[in-house]
Every structure is written in structure tokens, then in C-alpha cells.
Image (cartoon, rainbow, N blue to C red; front, side):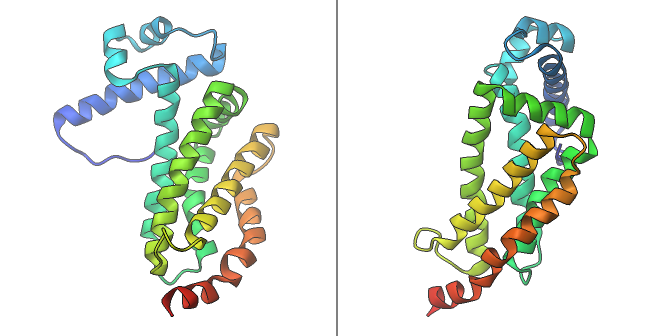
Length: 210
């Protein structure tokens, strides 16, 4: 879902193999269901050996974790790239929007994967675990943008948590109703959050710097 730097020939080859395995695994998992698919079936579909699979992934769950990791990395990188003068709600909306846009750009496949993740307990657990990691990364970036100490101030982590709650809500609504436009829904979610994210931030920042 996210672009990668060119890297060395070996790195590009590894990325291609990992992408092929991920695509084959996700297609099978979506079509057959998580419990019905074996690693042997994934490797057969991808045209690689079982040994090769375990060189890249430790389990079926790990394939989906890789998919989720790319979503989190995309949000973190987008937040870091936003102009420093942007209000927190705008910067965080763009960060979340980057992953929503990536899903919407591959709507049929992405929606199927989102449903698979949200409706399969082991994968939902992976998703929630990843969100905890993303919250820390987004909070650290928000603290850097605002000149705060993330260990001392509550605002960065609370703001990151609100953004990820919006992200999770958008995915859940989209999963429940494929007629929903996830991009439009993201905008609506952050319109609701904006007063809380922006209305107190000046006072919080002033207090942190005084």
C-alpha cells in the first residue's frame, strides 16, 4: 500500500517476493476464510516453497500484520510531512486520510481485507495491537510538532488516540456498509473532533512552554 525506496537489487527482489506472498495470502484468506486456509495453500498459490514463506512471515497472522504495518507507517510519514503551521486536526486528518485513500484506491480488495480483519478475532487482536504502536508513533510526532515532552504532557497521546478512534470508526462503518464513502466519512469524523483537537491546543502549548 505504501511506496518503497528503490533499494538494492536484493532488497527489491525480497520486496517482490513478500508482495507476491501477501497478495496470494490475502486473496485466499478473504475468499476462503481465515481458519480454512493453510500455509501450504498460500505457498502453492504464490508459487513458492513453504521454507520461503517462513523466511518472510512467521504465520498467517503475520501476513496481515505486514499489511497493517504499512498502513501505520503511511500515517506516521504523512503526519511528519505536514506543514508545521497546520492545526492539529488538519495534520492528523491528512495522516489518517493517507491510509483511507490507499484503501479507497483499491476499494474492492481493501474492503474485503478490512472486513476480514475486523471480523476475525485473531486478526482483530493484531489490528488493536498495531493501533497501540501507531498511537505511540503519532503521539511522538505530535509532540515534536508542538514542542512538547510526550512523557510529561497528555495532549499528544490523547490527540493520537482520537485520530485512531476516528480511523477505526471509519473502517467499521465502511465494513458494515460498502455504500459509505470512507474518504467523505473521514472528513466528517475530523470535523467532529476538530474543536477538541484545536480548541484547547493553544492553551496546552502555552502551559507546556511557560
